[in-house]
Length: 322
Ligand SMILES: Nc1nc2c(c(=O)[nH]1)N[C@H]1C(S)=C(S)[C@@H](COP(=O)(O)O)O[C@H]1N2
Ligand SMILES: [Mo]
Image 1 (cartoon, helix red, strand yellow):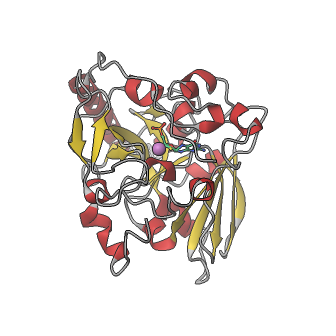
Image 2 (cartoon, rainbow, N blue to C red):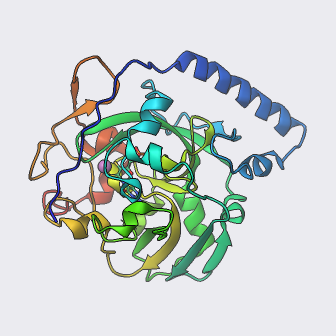
């Protein structure tokens, strides 16, 4: 099926991010963490990570090295303008339809080519990983963009625990299959469950991020709770939500959008202003909420992260491997 990505909902840019307010609150939190660390309260991170309710405060440190300094979009923009076809195809559907989605108990299965496969309750999976905040540029394949303060931990930290073997060339991710809870999965707009993948070196790149929070709090369901991937140099559809499995594999996984329309959505999906989508230009993007008008800005190679990731693709023709 060849459907246009729906882009019907217009964001009214009325709610400007109270970013100064947010920053000062964050400084307070960071200060609190410092005190706790000084007092030897190493259990604090664990306690915070056990907070599973949407919107519960998380304990984390800000990672300036991996953050852009652009002002983030408002929480409202980020949590009401979503793509999540399990909950509907309109941008406003996920925030309306995902509110009752159950994110606990949640189990993640890790398998395939690795020495230490396992089935873990999400809270046990999260325990060893201290949380950090990263403000990432996000670029959807539909040519809109946002700046988002995610909270999570590097995907590499998770992968290392399961000791992938030399046969592990890719990692495949899958979303929960639960048509009772996810009405979109009762239809055939995509081939369910939503599946994504990364080449192993991409997955181990420090920018690849497993996300559990947004604006310092537990991730809203519509943004992919309880566990979601973010690869900011790639189009947003690589950022699979509600992950229930990781599998180390030898062959390139068949991913959902590449399967749905192979001439339109590639496995790599690196943001590239020089390679247009067959039905629209990727040279510019509409920055959500940035102005009263449909203000476009130029799209950057690898979404501005070329310094960190361009070397992963040395010698590859990015027009062929789009
Ligand atoms: N399981 C699942 N994950 C998904 C999607 C989806 O439909 N289902 N949509 C993708 C697309 S196209 C984008 S642009 C991002 C949107 O993430 P956001 O809603 O947090 O901005 O999620 C990605 N992850
Ligand atoms: Mo997207």
